[in-house]
Length: 203
Image 1 (tube, rainbow, N blue to C red):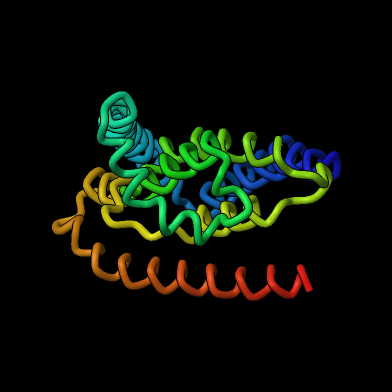
Image 2: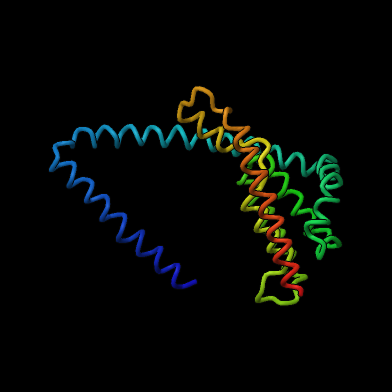
């Protein structure tokens, strides 16, 4: 872990400043200083617009998830997902707190709300670690949770659509069908491979 932290510090403290200085140097030598200035100011404007769009999108969907958690809708969603989650997480099907957090995480990912999915995923990991007998190793349920968070079927890719709206896409939602195909294929592949490897692990 310390090695990774040191690498990140090197990148932040040395590599990026060097790249910035080199870009200024090349723009001066090539006579493109005016283009560089224009790009800097236009980028600042684009970043602000994009940030505001993403913050609004995040507030909307995180607020919606909060409402869902406080109502009977979440219980309904958990009941619907329960048979699938019991098959995906057979070792943790009796851990009510973990399964509830996994359900929230799954629904959030399904709706493309990564910001709402992350806290639920961390809570699920925390609960799964409590029942994990080998504390220095990932349990089968923890491995499956990581795989599903990485692949995750997305019904409504809200974050991607919000980015496309902010960047002026004429048809920001035309990526939905390709995303359905790619995420379904990725999730099925991830689940099948993980199930096979976990069986071999037991053997």
